Amino acid sequence: MLRYAAIDIGSNAVRLLIADISKQDGKYKYKKNTLIRVPLRLGDDAFLDQYISEKKSADLVKTMTAFKNLMDVYHVSEYLACATSAMREARNGEDIVKLIKKEADVTLEIIEGQREANIIYANHIEEELDGNKNYLYIDVGGGSTELSVFVKGAPEASRSFNIGTIRMLDNQDKEETWDEMKDWVKEHTKAYKHLAGIGTGGNINKLFRMSDEKENAPLSLQKLNSMYNKLTSYSLKERINTLGLNPDRADVIIPACEIYLTLMKWTGIKQIYVPKVGMADGIIKLLIEEKLD
Image 1 (cartoon, rainbow, N blue to C red):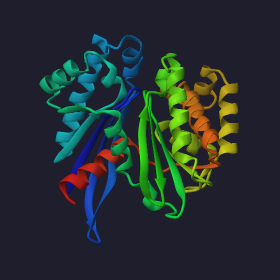
Image 2 (cartoon, rainbow, N blue to C red; image 1 turned 90 degrees about the horizontal axis):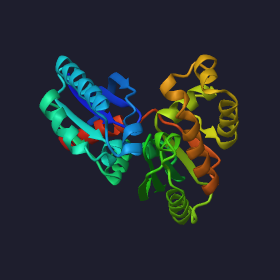
Image 3 (cartoon, rainbow, N blue to C red; image 1 turned 30 degrees about the horizontal axis):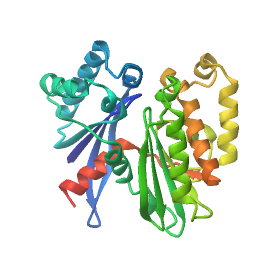
Image 4 (cartoon, rainbow, N blue to C red; image 1 turned 180 degrees about the horizontal axis):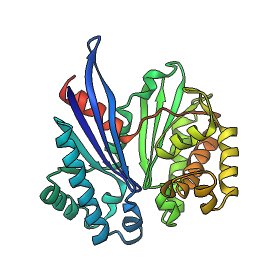
């Protein structure tokens, strides 16, 4: 069995996805075998101090060592490890990359926003949807939001903005970045009526599960708005105890909702599709394209 692995070092959590690769009808497919998520919250250090503390660095090294051991046990033949917004902004990001190579023997790449967007779009979600429709693809992370406009199945424009859930919780999101995002999204979507949304990221996946919508059905703006109102009516403690949200999800889900709702209102999007994929899936797809296709 051919196995690939993706490591996604985000601003909120660090993920390892191990996938089994197989060939069906002349095409390579992958099946998720194991997914591990560790909520390290590197963004808290990176966005406030532009520096990742010794404690968080040590936790990251331990996590990478564990991931390397698991990849060895699973006989992973190819992997790609990518770090996004938090590591991009930390002054000691490159030092941590060297430390991880030395201590955990994992080669890590700090990627720019545009490459992050390209990896997320390697999922080619738009192929599964109506080819005659136009879509705004929204991926919300802890440190940044990646946007892409798809017209009749082809990407027209994409951009990464420094607006994310951890950044917002730490009050490190800037008004001018919001204005920039608004101008960009309005400029690139104004020609398209009846635009639909595609939403990826841990928070929108959780919101979709909480919505009780049918598999593959879109989430309406109305439904998302009422869920947002419900979530904000609970305290953080109640979101954890009453709604059963993980502590590292219960706070970020609110700003995530705000980002999706804001973008949907700016563009007149009434429905958003929520495929169960993210950065880690994009990395696996990219590995297949680079190594096999």
